[in-house]
Length: 242
Image: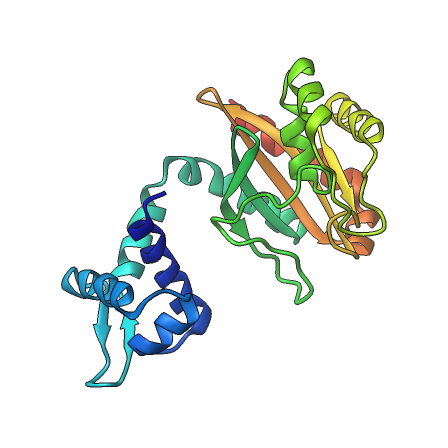
């Protein structure tokens, strides 16, 4: 990726993280890049109306232009428009977090994240990647989409890092888990990526592209209604695949 593009994105993510105006010297220090480079990025974004200076020496902050553009993007995203009603219904039925991710190669990025009403919840952010292929249900669903030869090739060279005491780190065990998931149509993660968190995932294909729907919540709460959640998940994916 271009260095200037990376620095521009780093700058925007820094403002989201800090949630306050930042001076040129603070930006340089926090991003660990030269002041001259920060100045160039700030000047370009200020000229285009994405950043403004609060006051002389008052620091810089993003304008509402980004929010307006994000709203336009969201309102016209063809995948989100198609999936949101179905997945909101799923979220309301289960009252758990529901996420939609798009698969590209061996990665999947979240396009939609719907929160439940419970104060105790599990939620990834839109734009996050599925964090593990061996320890999450979304990762297993992705691996389950591979051909047998491609899955074997992945397992031959893959490292399976342990995230919790229940993470599957045995390649034969992971392969059995994926085979079982493909047979059932859905995949499960019981405390394998985060202690106390369960997730269920299933795939659907639309326009020759693979998507993954994930339900996530506290293990104790989801386990009690696991069969119902799995049925609702599969039904939602069936609708989205039509």
